[in-house]
Amino acid sequence: MHIPTTLSRRLAVGLATIAATSSWPGLLPLPATATSGLSRDALLRKLSRVPVFVVTNQDDAPYLTEVDAQRRRSGFFFLGPQEAVTALNDIRAFDPSASLSVVSLDGIWFDISKSADEAATAPQPKAGTSTDLRLFRLRPLQDAGALADRERATASGVITTKEKKLGAEDIPLYYDPTFSLSVDGQEQRPYFFRLPDLKKSYQQQMGRDLSELPSLRVSTLSALINALQAGDASAVEPPVLLVAASEAGAVVERMSAGSTTATSDADGSAPSSKLPSAAPDASSAPDPFFLSVPFGGGKIKS
Image 1 (cartoon, rainbow, N blue to C red):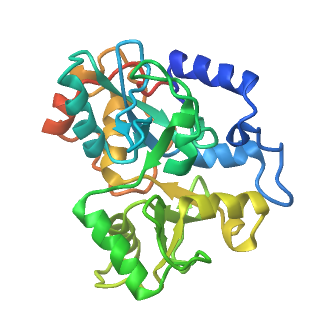
Image 2 (image 1 turned 30 degrees about the horizontal axis):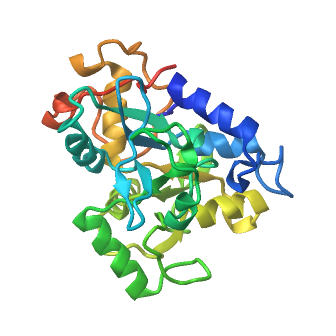
Image 3 (image 1 turned 90 degrees about the horizontal axis):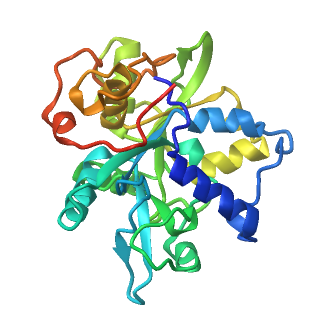
């Protein structure tokens, strides 16, 4: 599954305006190549495999769904589609035309805020939507299983970051340094957003069940990206493969295949390549979740 960059025109225009007029540090462009690290294009290609979801209005402007104690508004891009639907249902109580848009991580990562404190310093808009990506963060998976896996990772001492723990806003990535996958004719080390997806892929590759992974390690998305930019040998070789949460991959596969009326105006082309994730085959029967979600302008396109 390859996810092309699919920022809606409204988001893209907003981003371009900010980049041209703001001195915000988070919007400084990446160098063409980091010192002995990945090139900008190579890093963006890796991030482009990860879909994220956001609640938008009929003009594809993302909603600011959060308000802090000082009444400052901010919003989220979601890694999990179910969590995005929860936010969508809240918004649809006063905007029935609200929908979900799907974009790829490469289109937002270097422009969104990485913490609530950072988002709080962005200029506040007058409306309840904004195309200023500084007001948005990436939401870690928050379901019970994901939270339990975070706690176990901290307790078991397998976190590889210098802090040796996961902060509330960290995006954990699960991997096994002894496990690789052959993708596009190349052995790559997969980093999974969900631990069960790693276990399932490992079992499928090895042809046996296991209760625990032999060498489970946990990094964070920020730490991995920083390591790739810096040319950290442990991150660069073998090449990194980011594997989206299986339920997110399943939604994108269905949208790319145009398998339901919910995406009837998508071009229906097949993905250029498939990730070895645990996502169901796009040709399987449509699930109730997908049929019930109104998707907006950020559809997957070639």
